[in-house]
Length: 343
Image 1 (cartoon, rainbow, N blue to C red):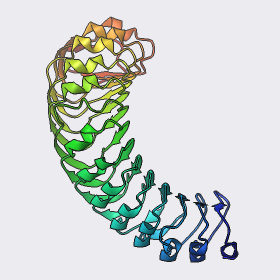
Image 2: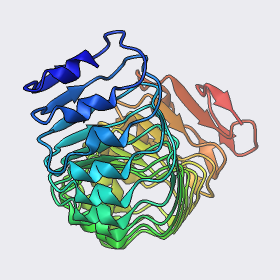
Image 3: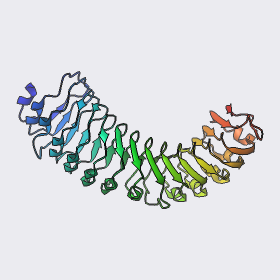
């Protein structure tokens, strides 16, 4: 509390300093404060509305990560119209996200992940037209993803590990600024749009553990920056689009537990940077292509739980970096001399 008497204080940085107890509400009287960093302290209690009571306060950064904070996020947070970065990562906050968050119009980074927030994502977040990094992962949020989110030039969107439902707004797939899209472990359904060409800067696509259906869009093959595609544990169907194997920067292709059909295309050998290839537990058929021998970076191959036939080529067995290779080699019709596990 004594620090609240330092009326000209501009920065209070006490990261991992053993500071305990609640955050003094008197800090809200420090009207010259620009930076408040109290992360990784064994704090207790709730956030007082008085902390954010000064409209148009000069605060530009508030980082309260890993502080054991509880209770609701006060609606007065909307008074911080000059704030650029706000983080409550990994606390025990509850309640809903106040709609007044939409008044924090200068915000570039908002981290509310790994808490216990409930309710829906407020559409007012669409007013944050400078927001680049938005993280709500691992909460208890429900309802749809508001399409207004794409009003911002988002670079990273983390909404995974919630109970969000509905379809993914098509506008998200027209966001050229996105580099990371994390929507996994929700209850999202529907099809992916045929045209995903606009995601020209996308590096990471994580849509696994949802209820998505339909074919895997061939247009994914045009997203040349992609390094990871995680579509496992959905209900995608149809054959693998050949265009997918034009992604020569791809390191992770994880398509397990879908309803994919057709053969493994021989074009798979083009993916020389591929490290993990999970095609297991689908309905794929036909031979295992010899071209898989060209996957010189591959470490894990899972092809069990399909209707593949023939032998795993000896050339694939000779891949030097492979630590896991699974197939249906306990069943008639598949032979493998090097599989680490047979099904």
